[in-house]
Length: 261
Image (tube, rainbow, N blue to C red; front, side):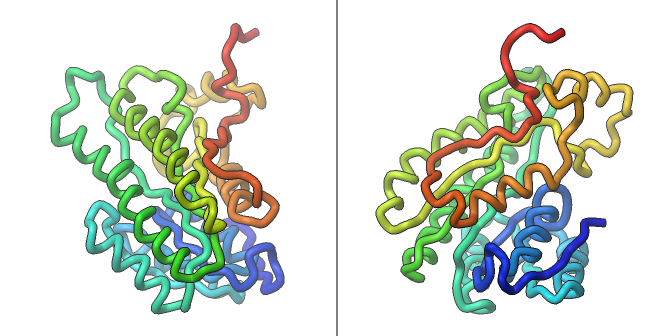
């Protein structure tokens, strides 16, 4: 279990953060990190039970959190999620749009319905959230930070991930013009692009299959959810105040080009 110590004078003291996909993996780790640094955290996802568990972890450490189940592919749900954060905590300063799905199949085996499901969550859902988050940040007049979860699949290539890669490539392209549109209001938007990370999605993969992936990374290990969460946290602090429109790779050197010894 992650060590969680609330800090009312942390780097995110008096901030309110919204995290989607907060019930497990990278989203959970980020929510705990935000809570540890003093933010009040709105926890969003499709399943209530995992969200409530994270809520309890944050509150047990003296932090503030609120579980709010939501399907981010639904336009009204995305709007209600952001409005709920404003109504419950009075403001919004940070958003981590982390919820995502994949379809791991060769191109000719992917159905149109599977294509639509990936794009609906990974692109349309994030786009809807960003629209409402920007409106809330502008309403607050204090600026803020938005981070989305992209992937090294957006720039690398893995057989079977054509649709997933396309969805993450769309996210990388999307944030650049948005950064130009909102920068004057002090709103920053960036992506984190994880490599191979130990999350619930990899729990069923045999260690024999994971070992070559770890060996391929420059740091010779797989990533942990906290590795990505800590970078996400940094992007949301004033330490990253001059960083916007970027897709920051967090892969332990997995995607570095060139021959490997």
